[in-house]
Image (cartoon, rainbow, N blue to C red):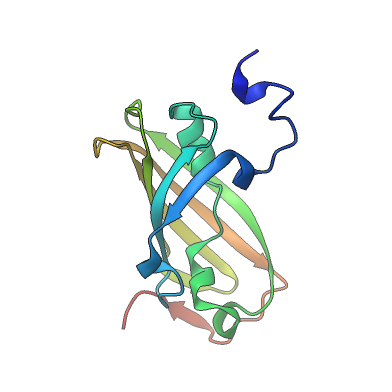
Amino acid sequence: MDEFNSRKSFGLSFHQRVDVRRNPAKIRSKKAELEGYIRLKDGRQPDLIVAGMLADSFRPPVINYGSEVVGTAWLATMELTVYFRNVPAPGWLKFAFHTRHLISGSNEVDSEICDSEGKLVAMARYLWTFEGFSLRETNSDLNHD
């Protein structure tokens, strides 16, 4: 049994298993963007399973707008497609998630995951819906000033 699946790591949450360094400029930036770096805390090097997990492991970037835009809601992934491009090199993975539109409680997220050498490892697109959504604006084009 490998370390990742050992009894020692059983029951750990996502954030107990990973080391995440978010780009501070993108936190509460009032743009629907989320960027940073991630690696496993147990020292295991990234592979395609880790890249696939990462594709749907973060909150949607539209949360950067706060409750004044999205209100209070439960978030659910409705659709996820991941395209694997390369086997990752050892080291940190860089991630970037971007949302362009928030319409009637749904938003799409486009993501790119690159390895420590800058190679594209995976691309993903997923659709989130906000249950209990109360939009402050009918339609929002999110990343335009």
